[in-house]
Each structure stands twice: as structure tokens, then as C-alpha cells.
Length: 269
Image 1 (cartoon, rainbow, N blue to C red):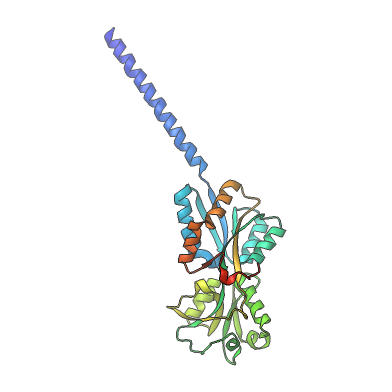
Image 2 (cartoon, helix red, strand yellow):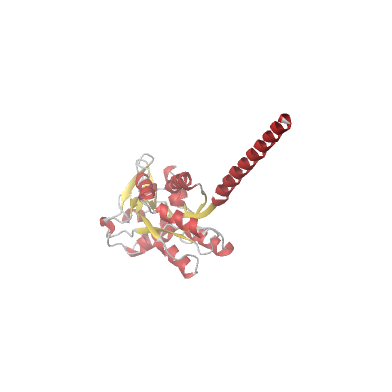
């Protein structure tokens, strides 16, 4: 009798242990189910800070970020085609405005300023010192494609604002789809100069010439969740994280001027 009783006790303990393990495993699965993968359409010029932002966000929430980097307008066309994804972060508010008109995004957070500068190969062999110098005879210039990336569209506006169309445009030998290509080609000395974002201009590999404020056009970078996101709560959480103190500190570390800043208080969106 005692032996049977002992066996029964062991069996009850085993059942209780299995029940406990089963509950614990179920709880773990529930936590896994709560984590999501977010698809973020992001302008190529924000690659470095946004990859670091993703690491910090994932460490904090468990949600993972999958980026689609590219030209801002190219990304907008992709979103329009498939209507999938969670967050859009173009290089300028004009693309965000276009996305809003299409009903893709509703609200946004403003993150940082995109400041155009002139870059040349190291030692500046063509002696480019001003915006006007991009129009000197024999100079080879590369600009972004205005149909693909924010810097291409803005470069055109800067040139036209300063009435330099007739001198600069004939010197444009190629148009690139992303700002990263502009930086690479200039650093390799394939062109004499280009217009790119300040935060991508590495002074160790190239020369940087600042455009005076009265000649320049500074843009603000927004980020917002997409209306067709299947994870709207997490998408908005990520948007808020990008514009949080922690997110902005990452952008500042990467050389961006974060929003707001008194120096650019009169910048129009």
C-alpha cells in the first residue's frame, strides 16, 4: 500500500511539473507573439543614424526593424504600388506631403535638418569655392536625380533660386539615384563637385564648401506611420522613438542638426 501511495505521489508531481512547464512555455510564446517586424521606408541619406536607432529600439521593445533604403520619391512609388509597410521617413517634407495627399500617412514627427553643401574631391583640384564656381568652364558636376531623391530635387531649386541654370546645368555630367552615390563618386574623384547633405560630407575624404544661408534651401526631415500598417501601435511607437531624446541624440552624434534649432527657426516646411 505504501509503495502504491509513493508511486501515486510521484505521478502527481510529474503531472504538476508538466503543467507548470506548459504554462511557462505558453507565457513565453505569448511574449514572442507580441513582438513584430516593422518595414520602414527610409531615405538613403539617413542610413547610418537610423540603423543605430533600430538597434536601440529593438533592444528596448523586442520589435525588429527591416529597412528599405532608397531615394525618397522611389520609396513613395514603391509604397503606392504595394501599399504595405509601417513607417515612411523621406529626406524632406515635400515627399511626406505627397504621401499625405495620397492618404498613406496622417501625422508626423520632425526629426532633423537636411542642409545642402558642396563637396569636392580631397584637395579640391578644380578650386571650387562657391556655388557660382560650379558653373565654371570645364567643371564636371554630379547632381542627384530630381525624380528619385530629395537632394536632386532640392539641388535644382537651389540652382534656379540663384539664377545659375545656364552656367551650372551644362556642367552636369551625371545624375545619381541616391545621395550615397554622389558622395562615393566625388570621394573617388570621378567628378569635380556635387551637392549633397552636410551630414554625409566626410571631411577626411573630401572638401566641404558651405552654401551661404541666403543662397541655400534647408529642409526638415519628418517621420510618420503608414495608414496601411498592420501594426499601427508599434509603428507609431517607433515613430515616437525616432523623435525622442534618445533617438535625436543618435542623429546628433552622426552629425545631424536636430529639430528644433534656433539657427533654422525661419525654415519653412
